[in-house]
Image (tube, rainbow, N blue to C red; front, side, top):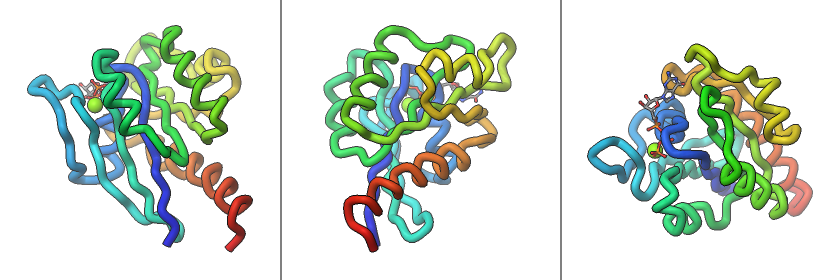
Length: 164
Ligand SMILES: Nc1nc2c(ncn2[C@@H]2O[C@H](COP(=O)(O)OP(=O)(O)OP(=O)(O)O)[C@@H](O)[C@H]2O)c(=O)[nH]1
Ligand SMILES: [Mg+2]
């Protein structure tokens, strides 16, 4: 079975841990007392003949070194943003880096349940046309769709490299 590494990136508090918990009941989580991620959340699922290893990362800038280690070798990235806060320069830089490496990425415009959120369309403009899926990670809305969209992009790449 083909193994795929999916990494969930994005700013602090955007909903990365909540996202992975909506897909996997009981991921391994290494977090601080306040619930912020220190190292990662991890679980694996099977999807369409793939074994998908899901890692979320710490969003806090202080843990950038850890984030980079966890993200190494990703086949695809889910980038979660808080749709009320939008994106900052650091987020755009990181997205640019991922794009330059040619790693497929899907952006989740999360927290669509909160008042004053940016629409998926507005988020799409901010992230320069990357695929954007509206999500409410808190109740799981859109999370499977985001993963499905990413895995179809990842699978295209895998099939190109090694047709099966
Ligand atoms: N209203 C609302 N709250 C959400 C949603 N997703 C996550 N949250 C809340 O946002 C807060 C932060 O969520 P986390 O999943 O811990 O965020 P994170 O990105 O893992 O944060 P770090 O690990 O610190 O980088 C928690 O209180 C969640 O319950 C959502 O879709 N809607
Ligand atoms: Mg977290």
